Length: 107
Image (cartoon, rainbow, N blue to C red):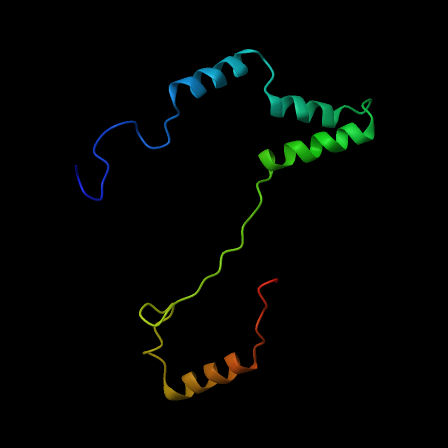
């Protein structure tokens, strides 16, 4: 077995045969669930509560949630190389950082 790399089998991202066939059958039927939810949401004759529910259900497929990413370096791998800065530039940077306020984990 090769260490650290894939040497055979199904290509990454390729669907299993069964889910692929299911998706093909759904698409061949004419209306996939997302299209149905969007059509109900756009139907002005449907009750507003139902349209709202369809909008909530369809939203994750159309507008995925963004996740917060914390960017940080460590002692062995800093984010910035400050070795090219002069002493006065480093002093200015230090004063600026000390003036800044910390943002809490909640945002």
